[in-house]
Length: 451
Image 1: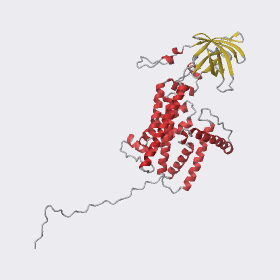
Image 2: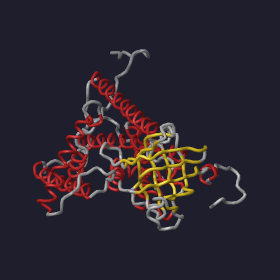
Image 3: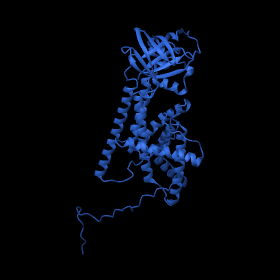
Image 4: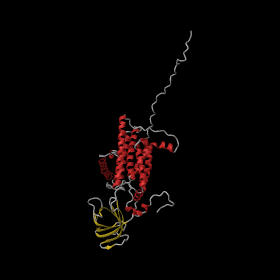
């Protein structure tokens, strides 16, 4: 009996290929109790403090919504402070300060409400091990809050409306009379280039925060910028300490998930792993494109609104505003009151020392005792009259003086001022000779020019 020999072309038996068993992805480690409680508190606080964002930034409804929310807290915070804390009445008047007693009381109320919310949340949701999706949602929300704030402050510097150039009055004010904030404003206002540099960094940080891939880089930029801002606000007594510190903490919050990876690369010199940049929720392709369109519209609106607003401020009352015909610095050559010529004696409370007329037709009057008065001016040389109003309102007290201009360098004011007849002759100062204005920039300096 013969055995058939298989041909060389015929395949032999194939060994089965081992298939690796399919294993489920490992379950992420649960968050520690302290981390879960802290997250609940931060989540509640951020929502309370920024309630209605981003709706309050939109056209048509934004202003009305912001006004309604502000009115609500202006009623609730003083009531709680008076009846619960037992403190005095809080002023809610707008003053330009973000560090009023009302602001500290409001922040304290938000902290208390967030503690209550986090406590209730911790009891109701005590079995949840982690908040992955909620953390992603909070991260997106904080990114946009911080990005919009950075664009607002950044464009106010790029178009130089936050720090205008020192006014005519500031140019002659003794340094010892500057407040710390006034000194900072004069320092910042002097240099358009430095405003562009710092404002550009803020705008860059804000734009980077709009996108997941560049969030870490944006947070690093904002931390660098806002650390300096917080230091300036604290050490120069600028009343935006609460808000600027909060913006800095937002940037730190965004950076926290990447601290270990940054330490691996920048400090420990070892490799790290990329993170997933997926959105917290999965959408259809059509919905994803629609959301991208909404995002681009929002970013476009933010860029348009902030640039247009700051450019309008720059051209209305900033350095781009037109100078009034009488713009300049004037010193008094002679001053007559009730027919008597008053010599320029230091400490005199009635004799004028000089005045400055700035953009917006504001006049800063300085007397011999160092006191200053501010007036809104109307009138002109052609009208032969100049009206000094102590404010902008219709009810503002007004004083009208006759105005003559005998030559290009002199003005003569006559009339009744503070209940007495005055005759004042002033000379316009050539401010171009001031060192601060004519020094300019020099690449080559053989010696420091420090005056």
